[in-house]
Length: 212
Image 1 (spheres, rainbow, N blue to C red):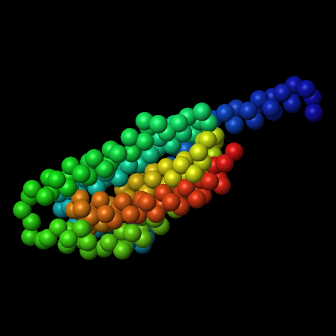
Image 2 (image 1 turned 30 degrees about the horizontal axis):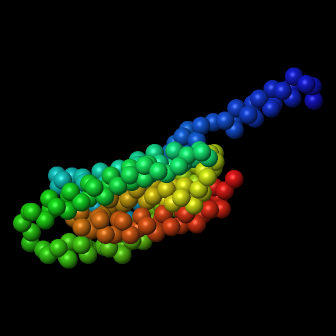
Image 3 (image 1 turned 180 degrees about the horizontal axis):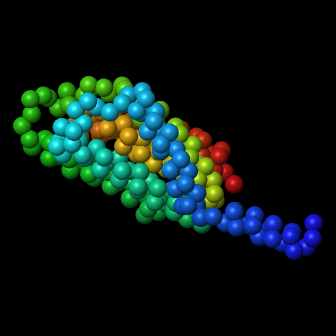
């Protein structure tokens, strides 16, 4: 190969490798999200009273919580994708969805109810929620790990856990359109447990996949 062609080939290869982690992660998530959405629509479908449910602020709150979780996890994960980065201070972003849920639980507690707090916590489909969010998360988790591989996290298990959290947040956003349980108590319990499961899986996979 001539010298000029060799230089051009090396430069092109370097350009491909130097694509920012955020761009690769965004592209991977844009591919995975329709897969998870199609999985939801072909298996569970949307809740039948979706238009009526949109008038319930607690229904809308589910999307606020799940999207705030995914957004905060993405921000922290991108920060930790650099080898010199530390988690100090950045973990506080992950408290945003918990703060929103805590406020919502307090508001709901002040409202009159026909059902007890335990009934609202258990809901109608707790086990379905606990299984569906991790299942819907799998394509997104694979995409998130693929995107974060572009970086060089010094703590791959933690980065993998964050990939799991952002995946569970996005999957939870999809599942919320099917979920008929709108109580913040239900969301705080079952969505959180499902998120912990996916975060644990992400940590296990990240320990191997994200190691450099």
